[in-house]
Image (cartoon, rainbow, N blue to C red):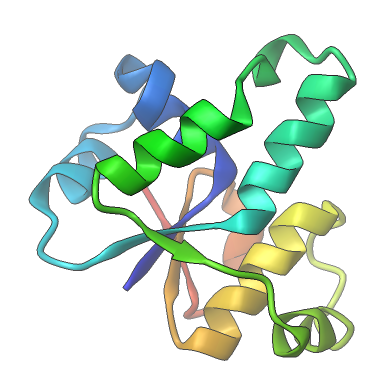
Amino acid sequence: MLLLDTHLILWAAFEPDRLSAKAAKQLRSRETPLAFSLASLWEVAIKSSLGRSDFVVDCQVLHQALLAQGFIELPIQAAHISRVSTLPWVHRDPFDRLLVAQAMVGGLSLLTVDSTLKGYGRFVRLV
């Protein structure tokens, strides 16, 4: 299963032209199940409420659209939170750190455009 980071989710939903050819192909193929984390929805909700122009999204609409497109919802579990505490400080963003932890605990690959996250190793794939 592939876990999409928040930017990829938003770009796929609202700005597909921003996706790299590799990312667009990965999202279209559906050979491997695609997942989104509730942490991404939480991030969007917080950043939208702060008035950030790059996060002007209705979380309920985004959530329903992801489910309608066949994405798998990944809840936040205690094991994910515990894993965050053991991660090296390669990246400071708490939402990205939680996504990395979810990928590690679940044996998933986190798809991202953030090259800093590659510092977490084999669980992160740049697209």
